[in-house]
Length: 100
Image 1: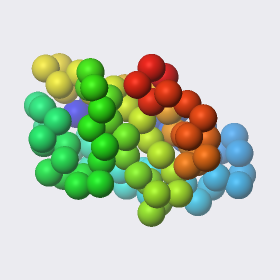
Image 2: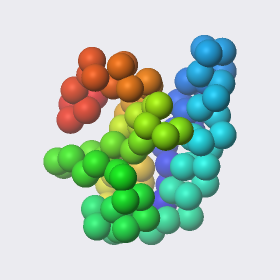
Image 3: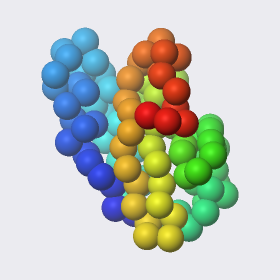
Image 4: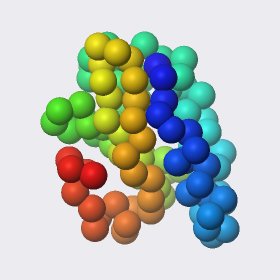
């Protein structure tokens, strides 16, 4: 999979020092994602059983034992993952994962 944009992930923990603990788990997710070949939501669930599959290609991943949430939009035919949001669980609760 092609992940757009890893810079969004890195900015999360470099811009806010209190989130530096997200670096390892987030990069672990990234390394798994770029090796993956997700052609449908079932492929994502098979690899990440705790992922939440939303409508229209949206997926929510739990990062660092559910301390952080990662929302992506996946274009399955083109094998592209677009980072839409990375934040703490309370920050996630304030957004609409379907539209962000």
